[in-house]
Length: 136
Image (cartoon, rainbow, N blue to C red; front, side):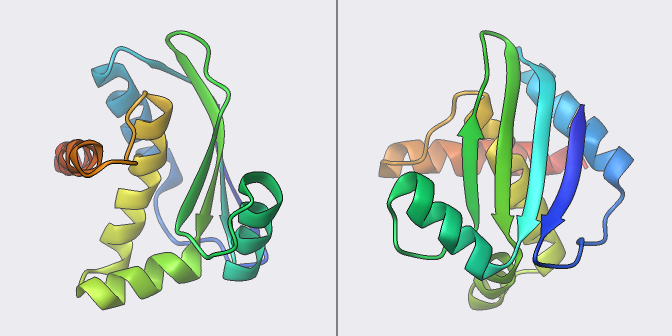
């Protein structure tokens, strides 16, 4: 079950059934099956609160992924900071809707085992995001 919810912000406008299907397709392309995945779109203040509380990071971020996956079944809570996604898109000169899709699939790629803490891993993550976006 893939769910979309909000915390202290309006729900972004997108076709939830289409995006849920896309998420399942991308997971399957990496040999995974989508289990219970909860997207929580939130304000900057809420994502900062979660970042401090759970990760001891005192900064805004566009995404926090909590991974509860077991073997091939991916599950997790994915918090997306809508305001940060929009400001990142503006700074990069990108379409906000496309940046949101990139961040949505970024969380799934984390659940599939991709990392982004080193320059090499970050490059691979960006390649996988581009591949996933080409499915849409």
